[in-house]
Amino acid sequence: MSTSAAPLDQRIDLLWPQVHALTLLAQSASFTQVAQRLGLSKAAVSQRITELERAVGQTLVQRTTRSVRLTEAGQRLVEQTAESFAHIARSVGEARDLATQPRGLVRVTAPVALGRQHVAPQIESFVRAQPDVRIELDLSDRLLTLAHEGFDLAVRHTSAPPDNHVAWKLCASRSLLVASSAYLKRHGEPTHPAELTAHACLPYLRPGPSVWQFERGARGEPERASVTVQGPLRASNSEVLRDAAISGLGVALLPDFSAASALRAWRPVGVFGDAIYAMHPWSPTTPKAVQALVAHLRAALGAVLGM
Image 1 (cartoon, rainbow, N blue to C red):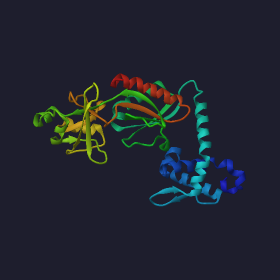
Image 2: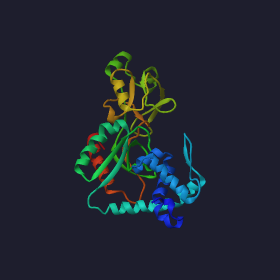
Image 3: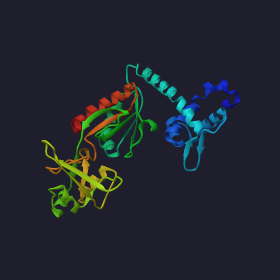
């Protein structure tokens, strides 16, 4: 029976799926992402929005070929029902955590290189040990928004986790400056960061000029140096840069989980962060499945990469 077949006051309780779809649409501005989160087709999501608009008697979403945005009425409806959905989520989470064993779906995102090399192998062993937990692992070097894109956990290489997330330190990490012996034989080994301006450097792909920062000295105020570098290749993946350095293309600055050697005196800082964290969108409770996965990753990565 269509929701449009009954008076509005008789079908309010039938409109929660439609309002929920509108809430997700407000977060992502994408019918495709909402469809993926709900396990529906885009047409089914669009139908839910249409049913809701018919029920309230006005347009809630403005659609064009390039964008999706809520009208004032749609945004107000989302804001006024947000706490209700948050309360439902908390209640369901608390009920789920009454289970004696971790169970349910945990959606995880991690950077490609770190995910391939260290997270994915540990998740394989985790799901064998926790048969009631299902994992969806998204490897992406984009900094995805956890709550808006429906992720339960993110593994991140950072020095400062955001305040609006629950963060667990999995292990320490550091950045390393590396080059092949063949490259150093041809071009010489730099002994000071300033010398890198004369070298072919392989920076991580980020907006603007590539600036590498260094410091040395363990006591008192460390000596610092900053140098703008350039070279034949920039990439947004440390495995690509590592392989380019191995082939002799130039000097790369890499996280330690992708490299194993460094200059002795100068220590690169401020590029990849000094630790690897698991982060969960803030909530009063954390699902047992998420807690179990974090504990597993902390033990495994701490043993492999060091605390």
